[in-house]
Image (tube, rainbow, N blue to C red; front, top):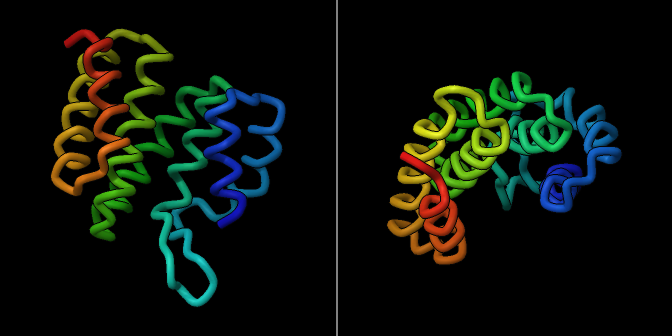
Length: 138
């Protein structure tokens, strides 16, 4: 779990050097659920922080594959808060990559994130999604 938290911090700071190091530590857990000892807390799919690390390093194809895997995993798990966080990260990655077709897909993901965040009363996530949505072309 600590590595997943460090991955989020690393991505937030844009720390490319440490992103690759953390990626190596977390990669063996891709496709698994990140839980605290004895299962009393869940952080969703390990593919989400892997996607964040890959995006931080500019590994766009790898990031996209991890985001898609995390969305599928968190959907199956019913982990709606982690699904919303994954969608926001994916939208941010698409906006940063800026390839053809990325802005409309990012816009769609942000709309989904905003709806889920509002439904779950995740106010900070909703505010972040709304701000990014306003800056993302449809």
